[in-house]
Length: 335
Image (cartoon, rainbow, N blue to C red; front, side, top):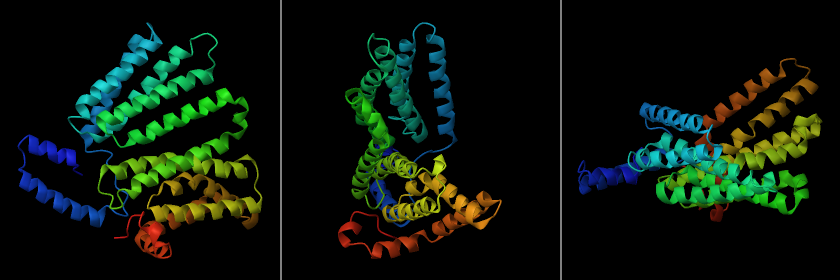
Protein backbone atom coordinates (compact mmCIF):
# COMPACT_ATOMS: atom_id res chain seq x y z
CA UNK A 1 0.00 0.00 0.00
CA UNK A 2 1.58 3.26 -1.12
CA UNK A 3 1.19 6.43 0.94
CA UNK A 4 1.41 10.05 -0.14
CA UNK A 5 4.92 10.16 1.30
CA UNK A 6 5.94 7.21 -0.89
CA UNK A 7 4.60 8.90 -4.01
CA UNK A 8 6.20 12.22 -3.17
CA UNK A 9 9.51 10.45 -2.59
CA UNK A 10 9.20 8.74 -6.00
CA UNK A 11 8.66 12.11 -7.70
CA UNK A 12 11.59 13.65 -5.84
CA UNK A 13 13.88 10.86 -7.01
CA UNK A 14 12.63 11.12 -10.59
CA UNK A 15 11.07 7.64 -10.63
CA UNK A 16 7.66 9.01 -11.72
CA UNK A 17 6.48 12.25 -13.25
CA UNK A 18 3.89 14.45 -11.54
CA UNK A 19 1.28 13.47 -14.15
CA UNK A 20 1.88 9.75 -13.64
CA UNK A 21 1.65 10.11 -9.87
CA UNK A 22 -1.62 12.07 -10.09
CA UNK A 23 -3.13 9.36 -12.30
CA UNK A 24 -1.91 6.69 -9.90
CA UNK A 25 -3.44 8.57 -6.96
CA UNK A 26 -6.76 8.67 -8.79
CA UNK A 27 -6.67 4.93 -9.43
CA UNK A 28 -5.55 4.27 -5.87
CA UNK A 29 -8.43 6.33 -4.46
CA UNK A 30 -10.93 4.37 -6.54
CA UNK A 31 -9.43 1.04 -5.49
CA UNK A 32 -9.32 1.95 -1.80
CA UNK A 33 -12.89 3.22 -1.90
CA UNK A 34 -14.08 -0.18 -3.11
CA UNK A 35 -11.76 -2.42 -1.09
CA UNK A 36 -10.51 -0.69 2.07
CA UNK A 37 -13.85 0.37 3.51
CA UNK A 38 -15.26 -2.46 5.65
CA UNK A 39 -11.96 -4.38 5.48
CA UNK A 40 -10.11 -2.51 8.27
CA UNK A 41 -6.82 -2.42 6.41
CA UNK A 42 -3.74 -1.00 8.09
CA UNK A 43 -0.08 -1.02 7.21
CA UNK A 44 1.89 -3.41 9.41
CA UNK A 45 4.56 -5.04 7.25
CA UNK A 46 5.82 -4.26 3.77
CA UNK A 47 7.82 -7.47 3.26
CA UNK A 48 10.24 -9.86 4.90
CA UNK A 49 12.86 -7.11 4.86
CA UNK A 50 10.80 -5.40 7.58
CA UNK A 51 11.21 -8.47 9.79
CA UNK A 52 14.92 -8.68 8.97
CA UNK A 53 15.44 -5.02 9.93
CA UNK A 54 13.46 -5.44 13.17
CA UNK A 55 15.57 -8.44 14.19
CA UNK A 56 18.77 -6.49 13.48
CA UNK A 57 17.53 -3.42 15.38
CA UNK A 58 16.52 -5.48 18.41
CA UNK A 59 19.90 -7.23 18.45
CA UNK A 60 21.67 -3.87 18.45
CA UNK A 61 19.37 -2.24 21.00
CA UNK A 62 19.28 -5.02 23.58
CA UNK A 63 22.97 -5.74 23.17
CA UNK A 64 23.67 -2.10 24.03
CA UNK A 65 21.73 -2.57 27.26
CA UNK A 66 23.67 -5.74 28.04
CA UNK A 67 27.01 -3.98 27.50
CA UNK A 68 26.21 -0.77 29.41
CA UNK A 69 24.14 -2.16 32.28
CA UNK A 70 27.19 -3.03 34.44
CA UNK A 71 28.16 0.64 34.21
CA UNK A 72 24.77 2.22 34.81
CA UNK A 73 21.14 1.21 34.25
CA UNK A 74 20.26 4.80 33.49
CA UNK A 75 23.01 5.11 30.89
CA UNK A 76 21.95 1.82 29.30
CA UNK A 77 18.33 2.96 28.88
CA UNK A 78 19.40 6.40 27.67
CA UNK A 79 21.55 4.88 24.94
CA UNK A 80 18.71 2.45 24.16
CA UNK A 81 16.32 5.39 23.57
CA UNK A 82 18.87 7.42 21.58
CA UNK A 83 19.66 4.47 19.32
CA UNK A 84 15.94 3.88 18.76
CA UNK A 85 15.50 7.48 17.56
CA UNK A 86 18.66 7.33 15.44
CA UNK A 87 17.56 4.13 13.71
CA UNK A 88 14.12 5.63 13.06
CA UNK A 89 15.74 8.54 11.24
CA UNK A 90 16.79 6.14 8.48
CA UNK A 91 14.37 3.22 8.49
CA UNK A 92 11.22 5.27 9.21
CA UNK A 93 11.87 8.76 7.86
CA UNK A 94 13.75 7.70 4.72
CA UNK A 95 12.86 4.07 4.03
CA UNK A 96 9.19 4.30 5.20
CA UNK A 97 9.26 0.80 6.72
CA UNK A 98 6.11 -0.01 8.68
CA UNK A 99 7.08 -2.75 11.14
CA UNK A 100 10.40 -1.12 12.14
CA UNK A 101 8.48 2.13 12.67
CA UNK A 102 6.20 0.47 15.22
CA UNK A 103 9.04 -1.40 16.92
CA UNK A 104 11.37 1.60 17.14
CA UNK A 105 8.59 3.82 18.47
CA UNK A 106 7.82 1.36 21.29
CA UNK A 107 11.51 0.95 22.10
CA UNK A 108 12.05 4.73 22.13
CA UNK A 109 9.11 5.59 24.39
CA UNK A 110 9.79 2.57 26.60
CA UNK A 111 13.48 3.50 26.83
CA UNK A 112 12.64 7.07 27.81
CA UNK A 113 10.17 5.87 30.45
CA UNK A 114 12.62 3.43 32.10
CA UNK A 115 15.51 5.87 31.87
CA UNK A 116 13.58 8.57 33.72
CA UNK A 117 12.09 6.01 36.12
CA UNK A 118 15.54 4.69 37.05
CA UNK A 119 16.63 8.26 37.84
CA UNK A 120 13.59 9.31 39.86
CA UNK A 121 13.19 6.03 41.74
CA UNK A 122 16.73 6.41 43.11
CA UNK A 123 15.92 9.81 44.60
CA UNK A 124 15.40 9.58 48.39
CA UNK A 125 11.81 9.97 49.64
CA UNK A 126 10.41 9.45 46.12
CA UNK A 127 7.69 6.82 46.09
CA UNK A 128 7.17 4.48 43.17
CA UNK A 129 3.99 6.38 42.27
CA UNK A 130 5.91 9.67 42.14
CA UNK A 131 8.66 8.10 40.05
CA UNK A 132 6.08 6.62 37.67
CA UNK A 133 4.33 9.99 37.52
CA UNK A 134 7.44 11.83 36.30
CA UNK A 135 8.51 9.01 33.96
CA UNK A 136 5.06 8.81 32.38
CA UNK A 137 4.97 12.59 31.87
CA UNK A 138 8.34 12.55 30.08
CA UNK A 139 7.30 9.49 28.05
CA UNK A 140 4.13 11.29 26.95
CA UNK A 141 6.15 14.30 25.80
CA UNK A 142 8.62 12.02 24.02
CA UNK A 143 5.76 10.30 22.19
CA UNK A 144 4.50 13.71 21.09
CA UNK A 145 7.96 14.65 19.83
CA UNK A 146 8.22 11.33 17.98
CA UNK A 147 4.84 11.99 16.34
CA UNK A 148 5.90 15.45 15.20
CA UNK A 149 9.02 13.98 13.62
CA UNK A 150 7.95 10.62 12.17
CA UNK A 151 4.11 10.56 12.11
CA UNK A 152 3.91 6.84 12.90
CA UNK A 153 0.17 6.01 13.32
CA UNK A 154 0.58 3.96 16.53
CA UNK A 155 2.28 6.92 18.23
CA UNK A 156 -1.00 8.58 19.22
CA UNK A 157 -2.20 5.42 20.99
CA UNK A 158 1.16 4.96 22.73
CA UNK A 159 1.11 8.61 23.80
CA UNK A 160 -2.42 8.20 25.14
CA UNK A 161 -1.33 5.12 27.08
CA UNK A 162 1.58 7.03 28.60
CA UNK A 163 -0.78 9.89 29.45
CA UNK A 164 -3.15 7.48 31.20
CA UNK A 165 -0.26 6.13 33.28
CA UNK A 166 0.66 9.72 34.18
CA UNK A 167 -2.91 10.62 35.20
CA UNK A 168 -3.32 7.38 37.16
CA UNK A 169 -0.02 7.92 38.97
CA UNK A 170 -0.97 11.53 39.73
CA UNK A 171 -4.32 10.41 41.13
CA UNK A 172 -2.71 7.78 43.34
CA UNK A 173 -0.14 10.27 44.64
CA UNK A 174 -2.78 12.88 45.50
CA UNK A 175 -5.53 10.44 46.55
CA UNK A 176 -4.05 7.08 47.70
CA UNK A 177 -7.55 5.70 48.31
CA UNK A 178 -8.29 6.02 44.59
CA UNK A 179 -6.77 2.54 44.22
CA UNK A 180 -10.16 1.16 45.27
CA UNK A 181 -11.73 2.79 42.19
CA UNK A 182 -9.08 1.61 39.75
CA UNK A 183 -11.51 -0.21 37.46
CA UNK A 184 -13.72 2.86 37.15
CA UNK A 185 -10.71 5.01 36.31
CA UNK A 186 -9.57 2.53 33.66
CA UNK A 187 -13.07 2.51 32.20
CA UNK A 188 -13.07 6.32 31.94
CA UNK A 189 -9.65 6.18 30.26
CA UNK A 190 -11.07 3.68 27.79
CA UNK A 191 -14.00 5.96 27.00
CA UNK A 192 -11.58 8.84 26.40
CA UNK A 193 -9.46 6.70 24.05
CA UNK A 194 -12.57 5.50 22.21
CA UNK A 195 -13.81 9.07 21.79
CA UNK A 196 -10.46 10.11 20.34
CA UNK A 197 -10.49 7.07 18.05
CA UNK A 198 -13.92 8.04 16.74
CA UNK A 199 -12.66 11.59 16.15
CA UNK A 200 -9.89 10.26 13.91
CA UNK A 201 -12.25 7.78 12.25
CA UNK A 202 -14.86 10.44 11.53
CA UNK A 203 -12.24 12.55 9.75
CA UNK A 204 -11.58 9.72 7.27
CA UNK A 205 -14.73 7.67 6.73
CA UNK A 206 -13.35 6.35 3.42
CA UNK A 207 -10.36 4.78 5.25
CA UNK A 208 -7.90 6.24 2.73
CA UNK A 209 -5.34 8.14 4.82
CA UNK A 210 -3.03 7.76 7.79
CA UNK A 211 -5.82 9.02 10.07
CA UNK A 212 -7.62 5.69 9.72
CA UNK A 213 -4.49 3.85 10.92
CA UNK A 214 -4.27 6.19 13.91
CA UNK A 215 -7.89 5.37 14.77
CA UNK A 216 -7.20 1.63 14.46
CA UNK A 217 -4.50 1.70 17.15
CA UNK A 218 -6.63 3.91 19.40
CA UNK A 219 -9.46 1.38 19.15
CA UNK A 220 -7.04 -1.37 20.15
CA UNK A 221 -6.08 0.72 23.18
CA UNK A 222 -9.63 1.62 24.19
CA UNK A 223 -11.22 -1.82 23.82
CA UNK A 224 -9.50 -3.65 26.74
CA UNK A 225 -9.73 -0.55 28.94
CA UNK A 226 -13.50 -0.53 28.46
CA UNK A 227 -14.15 -4.27 28.34
CA UNK A 228 -12.08 -5.45 31.31
CA UNK A 229 -13.65 -3.16 33.98
CA UNK A 230 -17.18 -3.98 32.79
CA UNK A 231 -16.78 -7.75 32.91
CA UNK A 232 -14.54 -7.72 35.99
CA UNK A 233 -17.28 -6.00 37.99
CA UNK A 234 -19.55 -8.94 37.17
CA UNK A 235 -17.05 -11.20 38.91
CA UNK A 236 -17.33 -14.06 36.42
CA UNK A 237 -13.62 -14.83 36.69
CA UNK A 238 -13.82 -14.80 40.49
CA UNK A 239 -16.26 -17.65 40.95
CA UNK A 240 -19.54 -15.81 40.26
CA UNK A 241 -21.10 -18.37 37.93
CA UNK A 242 -24.75 -17.43 38.41
CA UNK A 243 -27.01 -17.76 35.40
CA UNK A 244 -27.91 -14.06 35.52
CA UNK A 245 -24.26 -12.99 35.41
CA UNK A 246 -23.55 -15.32 32.52
CA UNK A 247 -26.54 -14.04 30.55
CA UNK A 248 -25.50 -10.44 31.24
CA UNK A 249 -22.07 -11.24 29.79
CA UNK A 250 -23.65 -12.64 26.62
CA UNK A 251 -25.95 -9.61 26.25
CA UNK A 252 -23.03 -7.24 26.77
CA UNK A 253 -21.02 -9.12 24.16
CA UNK A 254 -23.86 -8.74 21.68
CA UNK A 255 -23.90 -5.02 22.46
CA UNK A 256 -20.13 -4.78 21.95
CA UNK A 257 -20.49 -6.69 18.70
CA UNK A 258 -23.12 -4.22 17.51
CA UNK A 259 -20.80 -1.31 18.32
CA UNK A 260 -17.95 -3.05 16.48
CA UNK A 261 -20.12 -3.56 13.41
CA UNK A 262 -21.44 0.02 13.46
CA UNK A 263 -18.01 1.67 13.71
CA UNK A 264 -16.48 -1.06 11.48
CA UNK A 265 -13.82 -1.96 14.02
CA UNK A 266 -13.40 -5.48 15.39
CA UNK A 267 -11.36 -4.61 18.50
CA UNK A 268 -14.30 -4.82 20.94
CA UNK A 269 -15.25 -8.29 19.72
CA UNK A 270 -11.71 -9.61 20.13
CA UNK A 271 -11.14 -7.99 23.54
CA UNK A 272 -14.31 -9.43 25.07
CA UNK A 273 -14.00 -12.84 23.44
CA UNK A 274 -12.36 -14.51 26.47
CA UNK A 275 -15.15 -13.38 28.81
CA UNK A 276 -18.02 -14.50 26.60
CA UNK A 277 -16.37 -17.87 25.94
CA UNK A 278 -16.05 -18.43 29.69
CA UNK A 279 -19.67 -17.38 30.24
CA UNK A 280 -21.17 -19.53 27.49
CA UNK A 281 -19.00 -22.48 28.55
CA UNK A 282 -20.25 -22.14 32.14
CA UNK A 283 -23.88 -21.97 30.99
CA UNK A 284 -23.51 -25.10 28.85
CA UNK A 285 -21.67 -27.01 31.59
CA UNK A 286 -23.94 -26.02 34.50
CA UNK A 287 -27.29 -26.17 32.75
CA UNK A 288 -26.65 -28.48 29.82
CA UNK A 289 -24.70 -31.20 31.61
CA UNK A 290 -22.11 -31.45 28.81
CA UNK A 291 -18.58 -32.35 29.88
CA UNK A 292 -16.79 -30.83 26.89
CA UNK A 293 -18.52 -27.46 27.22
CA UNK A 294 -15.45 -25.35 26.39
CA UNK A 295 -14.86 -27.22 23.13
CA UNK A 296 -18.53 -26.88 22.20
CA UNK A 297 -18.36 -23.18 23.06
CA UNK A 298 -15.38 -22.76 20.73
CA UNK A 299 -17.32 -24.43 17.92
CA UNK A 300 -20.39 -22.23 18.46
CA UNK A 301 -18.57 -18.92 18.85
CA UNK A 302 -15.95 -19.69 16.20
CA UNK A 303 -18.65 -20.63 13.72
CA UNK A 304 -20.65 -17.55 14.63
CA UNK A 305 -17.66 -15.25 14.11
CA UNK A 306 -16.89 -16.82 10.74
CA UNK A 307 -20.51 -16.37 9.68
CA UNK A 308 -20.39 -12.77 10.89
CA UNK A 309 -17.21 -12.18 8.88
CA UNK A 310 -18.81 -13.60 5.74
CA UNK A 311 -21.97 -11.47 6.15
CA UNK A 312 -20.21 -8.43 7.65
CA UNK A 313 -21.18 -6.01 4.85
CA UNK A 314 -24.81 -7.14 4.80
CA UNK A 315 -25.17 -6.92 8.59
CA UNK A 316 -23.53 -3.48 8.64
CA UNK A 317 -25.92 -2.26 5.98
CA UNK A 318 -28.92 -3.45 8.00
CA UNK A 319 -27.59 -1.96 11.22
CA UNK A 320 -26.70 1.40 9.69
CA UNK A 321 -30.12 1.64 8.08
CA UNK A 322 -31.76 1.95 11.51
CA UNK A 323 -29.31 4.55 12.84
CA UNK A 324 -30.05 8.28 12.54
CA UNK A 325 -28.43 10.10 9.63
CA UNK A 326 -26.61 12.38 12.09
CA UNK A 327 -24.75 9.31 13.42
CA UNK A 328 -24.28 7.58 10.06
CA UNK A 329 -22.45 10.61 8.68
CA UNK A 330 -19.56 9.93 11.10
CA UNK A 331 -19.32 6.22 10.25
CA UNK A 332 -17.75 4.45 7.26
CA UNK A 333 -20.23 3.77 4.47
CA UNK A 334 -20.96 0.24 3.34
CA UNK A 335 -19.43 -0.42 -0.07
